[in-house]
Image (cartoon, rainbow, N blue to C red; front, side, top):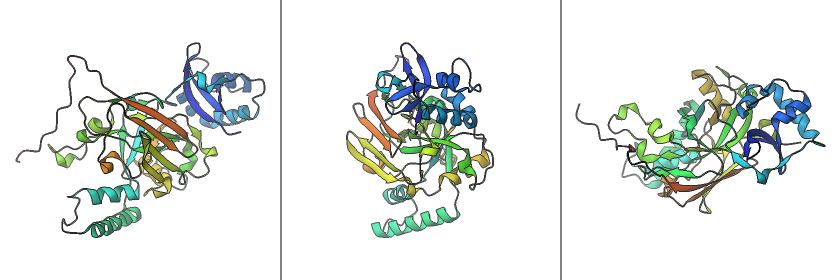
Length: 345
């Protein structure tokens, strides 16, 4: 029977990882006792522990899901849904959706096209660049802080020092076994599940005009508290027929801003895992965000503000909902200082 995995909280249980079947949640620690799995810690079990022993625990969970008679579940609606996992490492692919990158190249002057060109000429040039990149290029990736993780229904705090908070709804890949230098042919063997992620970005903090040769500042622009809403749950890979055929939809105050299929990725999930694992060690429970489709706030000329409601959904993975609110500052809080344009050399 299909199931998903999440982390939940209640007054009498505290925080615990659970298996979700229908509208009921079953504590994984209790399932492990009943179905004989001794690979999990007896106390203070976390979802990271589950993925650390994924190859042993997943068959146990499948057995439990098929034999739930007599096992007490808790109504999902009675529990608080937390971020399903706190990964040790979060890796994000950038510029990985064809239409998204083409829009960027068209929308932004100074991207290399002649200012006198028509819109159609700029589009043809951008499409040729993307064709060449897909055939001969490499993915682009960066690391995001663990402290950026936010629950699927928690408030997203809008920093007091950013006026350009943007959304980037993405398919997240959860790693199930250690990965290093794996080929794309075998990469999916290391995937345990999929989850919704929203790579929130402070656009006005990310460019470094004071030292442009260093590129973008992902610490300042990508890793603030709450800059990665995640969940509501992780769907095991077994229950996702084709991760490259899922519709991603983001609504802002009910209006659709992003609506595109994962089949528009420039580099597939196996290609991303191959690339990332070539340069770093991937660990069980790590989350790889696979890039965002077109329709970000930059394209719409609309950024997040207090009072906004973000709703993100991906086919078969559920829906997350985050209300935006203002940051409350301490009297001595240090704010972001705008990066100045580089001086003469």
